[in-house]
Image 1 (spheres, rainbow, N blue to C red):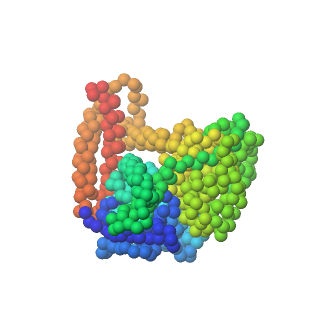
Image 2 (cartoon, rainbow, N blue to C red; image 1 turned 30 degrees about the vertical axis):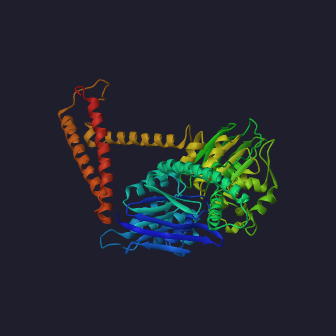
Image 3 (cartoon, rainbow, N blue to C red; image 1 turned 120 degrees about the vertical axis):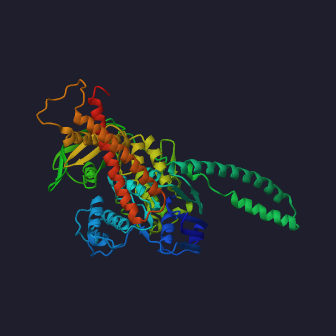
Length: 600
């Protein structure tokens, strides 16, 4: 294995708060690593240290000589006067005829950046992040570091990036909360937990299995430590003050056991436990609602009756009108025609993708929440103080004393979620709730929403989140068209792929090889013998598929050998796509011919 990065005894702290200590880790060519940790545990700090942006207390971070490293940060830096095209266009890596600017245009289009002349300083945060992602990929680094690359991408872009990173023979270290993305792309998971780093050689599913085994072992070890501590504590109480050297050793051992016994393994079992208000049978009814902004149509004469306890996901391309739809429903903007009839018992809880607003960032977390409510009602029997409620959102007593401006992006999102749920809404509208939340918080939120006694509308690009929560989907197709799909996202995506296959099959029937004479009579249901030309076509197609399969196997072996350079890998990847497309088209035509021939 070729070593790309060696980390030895790396330690980092902020004041008296230790993030991680004595981390020793190796990253090798071909590793695709997902970095997982709770919000505030140091994921971004860890990436910044590796990228050379942030300093550390002690240890060594050593890259392979000559290694080209690309880094996508959560908040990319750029010249606000540069255009998107200027910023993204890479410097030529080699002398060839391929235009770097053309490559940049292609990649920017992939990330839905259509105005190449727009200045970076006029872009939204999401647009700037997508341009920065395009720039990072176009640089074709040997070692790619990505901090939340799926934020601000719609689902189709996420799936494209997922497939791109899966196919490329690159070395990758990334932070993402997208569990399907982790499972498909990564071959190794690294977790920062309780100031230590644990490595798992497998995908996300494998990590979950092995982490559970680690927790069970830790619980067992903790039980042994506490039993031994009780024995030693009894000895300490019975011994005289004057002790010999053996007694001193035992005293030191007692204090070590006492420190080990303080390990907290309970956070993984926490639940949000927020309540909800009663909701009646009438929720809302949309009647012939239309909304446009100039030539852009968001809703076109849309009607729908929302049912009690309904949970719906909203998906669609960026700019299709998902966030506008929510603002219409909440009454923040008015429709051009039609109206929403909202039930009297509906109590909204709105989690905006813009995040917290109206908070004094110089206040402590506990003070800001206490100003909203000093006591939070969970149900008829349960009341919690502001501090107790925050603890359910993974805010320790120490973190509750932090000033808001010192919170990480994920901690801010978690605090925002707490302030939404503490008001006991019965209709939750969540606009991109998964951005910046760690996987532990997402899992807890999913469990809460699954049991939530109210209605939910969620806009999200997180496929795993949608699959766990929603009963059906509103698919925004653009131009005011909304399709109601009865199922979760994975089922919807499967249906879309099947429709695409059918479309390609129909198109293949229109090719010259299969169209035949336009004056031929329509074929009846009874099988017929193939013509001489069709038999010959079938033979040629079988031979072609066999040849393509052989080339595909040889290409896969070459790409896996580690002997190809970057240009050769890129060329091989393009050829692989062409081969797969030709095999699919040929096999569809073979099936058509075989169904037609009564002798087969």
